[in-house]
Image 1 (cartoon, rainbow, N blue to C red):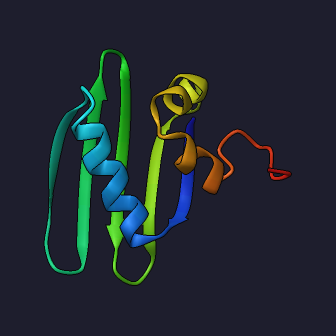
Image 2 (image 1 turned 120 degrees about the vertical axis):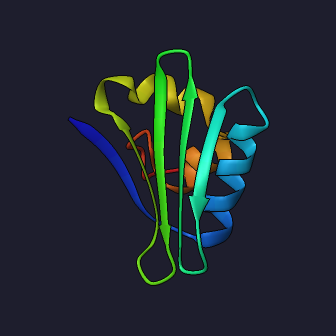
Length: 89
């Protein structure tokens, strides 16, 4: 089962992709004017990313890896998208 984070703002999506690519994750990417994708791998972890100009950005990863993935992401991103399930801030 996959864990999905949707409605990611364009700047946040590209910043996250570039951040992970610069912090030890293997990055494969592609796309065009209206659509971009990226697959990031680090050890056993994998994050799939998609950005669509109309639908916004999305990341997904195995639900069983959520805690490990969250530990790898910038704290600001995890907080902004309530990835730990604590909307209280």
